[in-house]
Amino acid sequence: MAVVGAGLGGTTLAALLVAGGFDVTVYEQAPALSALGAGIHLGPNVVKVLRALGIGDELLSISNVPDAWVSRDSITGDRLFRLEFDAARYGAPYLTVHRGRFHELLTGLVPKDRIALNKRLVGIDDSGEAIELAFDDGSRACADIVVGADGLNSKVRELLLGEERPVFTGNVSYRADYPAHLLVGVELDDVTKWWGPGRSVIVYFLDWRRETVYFVADVPQPVWTADRSFVPGDLEELHAAFEDCHPDLVKILKAAPETSKWGMFEREPLPLWSRSRIVLLGDACHPMRPHMGQGAAMAIEDGAVLARCLLANEPGDHSGAFAQYEATRRDRASAVQAESKRNRWLKAEYDPLWVYGYDAINVPLEVPRANGA
Ligand code: FAD
Image (cartoon, rainbow, N blue to C red):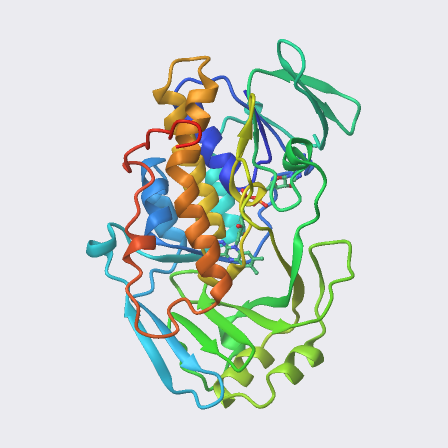
């Protein structure tokens, strides 16, 4: 079996399948699994999967465990909502962590010889007895099943559904992380989202010592012309976008020595998640705006449920497993995709139990509906 992409979703799937005795190879275009990246929220719904993978304790040792989420008005600083992260109610704690370190922990679960680096997929031939994958270095590989876990610009998705660029949302995100001692005169809550008008900023710590501050600042931008997902950000441009805001927020942004700017892209829900022996997960299948901090969560949940379906069905019955996977996951991923688009998550009083209470390891696997039902 081939998994294309060693991101968060592909790695979760591979780790669970290797543990279940599957013969899996992950093909990753990057030359190395480097610990790059900035911050990530891991909601209780993700932490449940990571505990099942056996990395719950290690993860805790490198994460911050915020006790609450705080929403504040960007101009007045008024508190709009405070949500206590009730680990007993959601079944696990809420974590914030350095994304690269988290990814490193996850990839450590897949034996090194099961991850082929420097393999950028360029073609798939599904006409023979085995599926043939072609890579940009001229090499080829065969597999009985191919999983497209290759992110927003998925080649597997393109080969399945035709070429269609993801849609620019009209928003960019400035991201930065910096040592907490650079921020003077501001008492930070563990996780704060600053709201409006027309912009937002989320701020949190990346470690339990609260030594590193991280923010993502969303602002409108009419077009995205870069051919990459991010470019170096202009600090003056960032500061100008928030100059009328509460002094604490202005200080948080001004303390960053540098920033990067990311284009925000999305897709409409796909008409199909699999065809024949090929299946999609994560951003390859349902990329979403980052406003709920649940994009990676959905990729990880997908990986867990797809692994369960493959393990639960007879070997060789990939179509049964894929149908069960889609039936179990489609409504949830689409609901989170739609809610992310609204950009109102936890702005005002709200019960997030339907998102945080989900348990991909134990949720019943759905019976696929018959055609036309
Ligand atoms: P990816 O993580 O994108 O992995 C895809 C992998 O496939 C990559 O390793 C890539 O190199 C590889 N690949 C691509 N093409 C090929 C090819 N042709 N051949 C071989 N390999 C290939 N989500 C959260 O849950 N919490 C957050 O706090 C959060 N914050 C975010 C903040 C911002 C600003 C943004 C933009 C996103 C955020 N997300 C967050 C969303 C999250 O980053 C994505 O949803 C998540 O990374 C998707 O995981 P994935 O495994 O599907 O794809």
